[in-house]
Image (tube, rainbow, N blue to C red):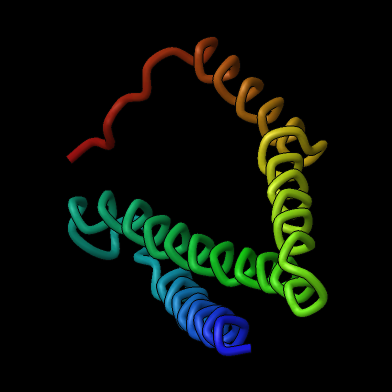
Length: 130
């Protein structure tokens, strides 16, 4: 029971932290500098920094969600230790399918390939004029 409580506490803190980071990202989007409103260096640095915060928020959300998956795998341990092994393998297979074989991932890959092809036809990007 103690291990299950630890997993849920870990998940709680990951979810709470990801919500704060998502909120920070929303504040950054709302405070995004408009073109010509500030220094060009700040305008250039702003999107990657906002993207980093969003990426970290998503990572924490993902870890919290995975904690729930593995908590589900821990539950059958109360019935028999071998069931823990079976449900853990089942959770790993589900996560593998969702991370590497899902329709959503295929769609994202196709979108990335289309974006790369469009970038090749546009040529190299020019940096903004100072």
